[in-house]
Amino acid sequence: MGLYAAAAAVLAGVESRQGSIKGLVYASSFQNVKQLYALVCETQRYSAVLDAVIASAGLLRAEKQLRPHLAKVLVYELLLGKGFRGGGGRWRALLRRHQARLRAELARLKVRRGVSSNEELLEAGAQPGPAAQVPRFVRVNTLKTCTEDAVDYFKRQGFSYQGRASSLEDLRALQGKSFLLDPLLPELLVFPAHTDLHEHPLYRAGHLILQDKASCLPATLLAPRPGAHVIDACAAPGNKTSHLAALLKNRGKIFAFDLDAKRLASMATLLARAGVSCCELAEKDFLAVSPSDERYRQVEYILLDPSCSGSGMVTRQLEEPGAGAPSPERLRALAGFQQRALCHALTFPALQRLVYSTCSLCQEENEDVVQAALQQSSGAFRLAPVLPAWPHRGLSTFPGAEHCLRASPETTLTGGFFVAVFERVQVPSSASQPPAQAPEPPSPGPKRKKRRRKAAGDPCAAPGP
Image (cartoon, rainbow, N blue to C red; front, top):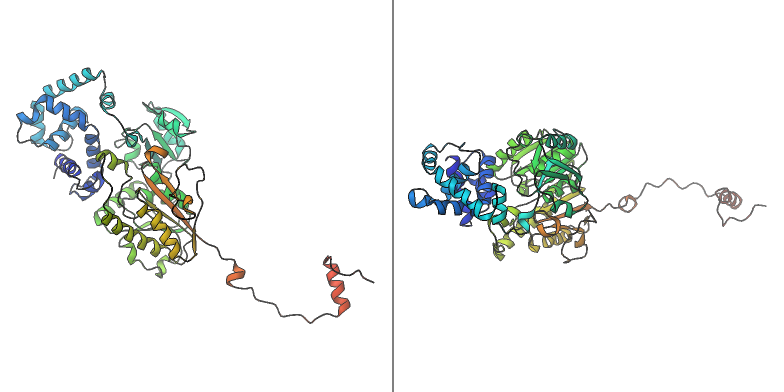
């Protein structure tokens, strides 16, 4: 299947609620998933504009064999994209017969809305909700470059660098070709919403990772020390794995598991481009990984980001405005799996710290799962108090839930997210294993005992003769 046919199929699937853009892209047979994902996202972003132009030009009336979703993809590529680059010779020739009319209708639409650029046309026709205002976050991949060099590169490209943000209001005010350093995460650059960097040379070379700020929290809060052994339990598509490798400085070991072979193959490509060399991928169910296996006896850190409803994903909110909550049946099934995976992870013998995260807004997948796992751990683990200044905390469903973090477009200018950090409760050595006692020395006589107590500064010792 060619690029344009694949993009049209994904758009049709999203419209009929067969899945999210990302899920349908990975499920497609098209090999270059990043190219496909970028094309679908941009076509969807300009959907209302494209519908207006196609209707005004009468394209579907003139070309009855052209299906609406394919027409939308092709018109985006012709008018707003980078020209035809994905084959489609038959459709390319067809669209070029209507090129003059389509361009004229696009120009008329700009005049009617009083704008001069495509981006202004998009903004003039939109009534953005909070999800549409989430900035473009870009993590600098420190395995390949440093923040200072990335900032200098963008400045040479004509971007205006505004320094480190001091508040969320600074991020909200971003516009045009300006960018900031995130106020919390030192290697996160922040650009205005809708900034497209999929074709940027630093991204294509693996120097930059396009990753939402909330998605950067799990690895940041796990904070594995360089040289440590780490498990990424549900790893694909791999952005968090590459973040872990950067924190490890490629020293130590990451054991990354996922059941989806196609997603793992894409993940291997991503990790190679990012310069990750400390990761061992396995097509395996994490629940089938034995904590007693000798290979994992040194694992001190686990990142568990399991399958979830995705109800907090910005892309889902933009694709499906007003989409309903997951059904109770689906939530029960997801929460059951999440709880089993979390309780399983807490049984690894050397584990010291674990991060549980989801991109869900649902209590059933978040606080309820965490509470059940804490109860099952019988006091061996507790929730670590992290990021006390973070404005959005866990729901008050059990004591200590305030240590969990939540994120949303409204409160943190990120995608919807949930994070809980588990840490092992350190039992004092005296309680778990009393120190060996030295043999009792012979009891000294009364005078010798009194002199010894005085020499030691014992205030109860009687004065000497």
